[in-house]
Image (spheres, helix red, strand yellow):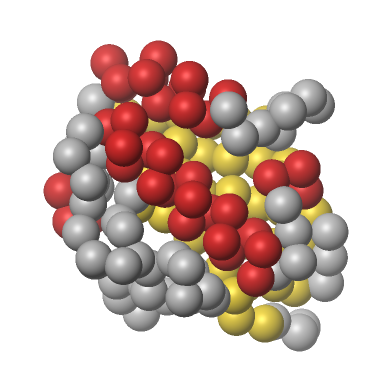
Length: 125
C-alpha cells in the first residue's frame, strides 16, 4: 500500500508519534486537529476561537493533500463539553456546503493540551 504523509507549515506539527495526515490512493485521512495556532504553538481562548483555528488547520492540511472542504466525506468533532455543540456547529457550518459530509460529534473526557474541540476528517479526491 502506498502511504504519503500530509503535513503543512500552516498547521501545527503532530504532538506525538503519528502523522497529521496520510494520503493513500484517492483517500485522505487527517488526524484530529486541535485549535493550536501554528505560529504560536498555543490554543486561543474560547471554544469558538479554537474551532475556527482547528478548521484552519484542517484546511491547510487538505490543501497540502490537493483537497478542499468540498472533498470531505466524513468528519468527527470531539468536544470537551457537549454544551458547546451549537457554538462549534455555527463555525463548522461556515466551512462546509451541501451536500454536507457525514459527521459524528461526541463529548470526550478530555482533549490533549487542554483543548476544547478537536476535528478530524476523511476526504476523497
